[in-house]
Length: 128
Image (cartoon, rainbow, N blue to C red; front, side, top):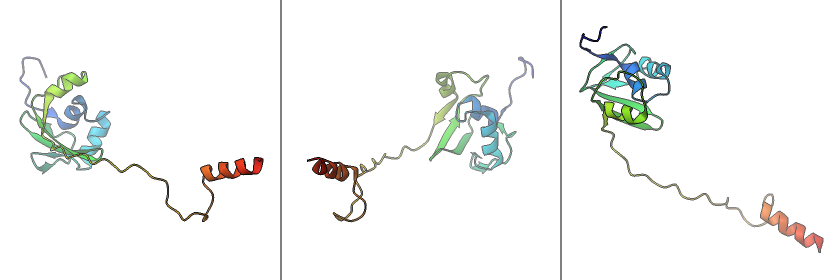
């Protein structure tokens, strides 16, 4: 494709990689072929599906579901600041729930193996 020719679209796997949602283009293509990506509410079955500005993509990323609107097509995989200009994040932020601090396992005193603290106390008594 020459520079004078306008871009009609871009492969969805390449755009996902350039926008830095995936570490490699292979991972982006795999997500597409495994039918984990949706484009405008339609399931994408091929990595070669053409993407255009204005499309909305929905895909899993880690434990979260990402929803992004394509603002521009990518010319290259640049720095993260440049990648953020390619999309608008529409993901609804869920309130983060803080996990409760891990407490020591509850057990009845004298049952089971001694804890490290109990063993050290026992060792101190024996040294006297």
